[in-house]
Amino acid sequence: MDAITALFAGFETALTPINLLWALVGVTLGTLVGVLPGIGPALTVALLLPVTAKLPPVSAFIMFAGIYYGGMFGGSTTSILLNTPGESSSIITALEGNKMARKGRAAAALATAAIGSFVAGTIGTMLLTFAAPAIAEIAVQIRPEAKFSLIMLAFVTISATFGGSPLRGLISLFFGLCIGLVGTDLQSGQARFTLGRPELLDGIEFVTVVIGLFAIGETLFVASRLRKDKASVIKLEGNARMTREDWRRSWKPWLRGTALGFPFGAIPAGGAEIPTFLSYTLEKKLSKHPEEFGKGAIEGVAGPEAANNAAAAGVLVPLLTLGLPTSATAAILLAAFQQYGLQPGPLLFVTSPELVWGLIASLYIGNVMLLALNLPLAPVWAKLLLIPRPFLYAGILVFSTVGVYSLNNSVFDLFLLALFGIIGYGMRRFDFPITPAIIGVILGPTAESFFRTALQQSNGDYSTFVRQPLSAFILFIVALALIVPAVLKARKPSVVS
Image (cartoon, rainbow, N blue to C red; front, side):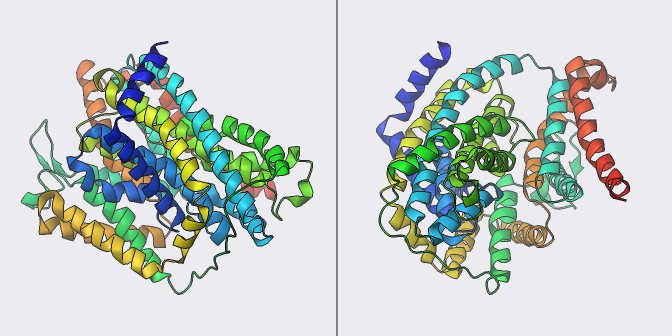
């Protein structure tokens, strides 16, 4: 009942005219960037961080939530009509949805994706409403040792799951941790990694790092491949709609995809990729038309799209209750919290209930807005795919530069932006995932703080991390996550031979 009462209070916050306007701006922007290939919700929220610094936190996060969900809705349009998945979790949608579009069923594919996203997003938000406060009540009792170990678990699992190589993920994480250490140590007063530059004594603005690695790096990467990546857009005739037969074949995959997506999104190593692939495999086994899979089966779009959106709601559970991001967009949202001097975690429900419940209530509202925007306006969104990429990325470059400069009016920040942009390009070029670096920058100082607090409380006894039961258990899982994949990989050749 407490959660329901708090949710109604959240609706009072979210339904004010100004917050409804920000929600509409968010879902529209989110759909827009979701449709445009190569620009995801993470990049958009990163670009908007400098602009929203003056906004009230509640309004800013309602808009960010709209962008987050809207990006999920819009990404299906690009996958289906352009056969270009904006994120790895949309690969299955591109596989089956584009085949449907080529057979003249683009409207049905877009409709099942949009309605499935609405169903999964709404059910996922309901689960978030009741799960998050319960987990927060437990999490508030967690000791600093266990909190440090939880961050270690997030570091290892995210480094292992993002990108094709765990080693590259760990290198990316190490780079982010080093950047997070730059500046003056608040306890000892010693300067760390400042290279004698007074501009670095206060550390590096995470907004500069995020925009450099995401926006500038992506722009340089797209520019370098502009002549190689050419794809044709399939024309959409009429609005997104489904026949009675499409509805009959879609509703069960929507529910099964939701059941798979939410729990995977809520665990540190879950993400949205695994449940979408599991959903596709499950639907192929359960379908009465398995011969259509790979040639344009509607169940192959409905289930994975629902799993993708349910996972997006699940990602908010560890972010809000433990302060642990499990996706790129969640990492940027965590940076946004820190921009306002807020630390997501169990105490956030006590210290900022208006923000938390206003944000959760806005997810329900945003879902309804997204359905209304995506079904009748699908032909309009489809036309956005015709915008020439050079115009698009030139705009991003200008917006990024102006945004970072406006933070401190510092030319030195622009040099840093260019430097991180080049590093971001290099990471994409050589297949190093960006997300572990961002999470290292954001969570590195927090991990250091918990580490020092635990040592202070134990009078400098390092064994406190293995004597405290929960901390020892989490560290054991961390060790397994590091050792087991390496052992399995080493044994694979001998098994094959």
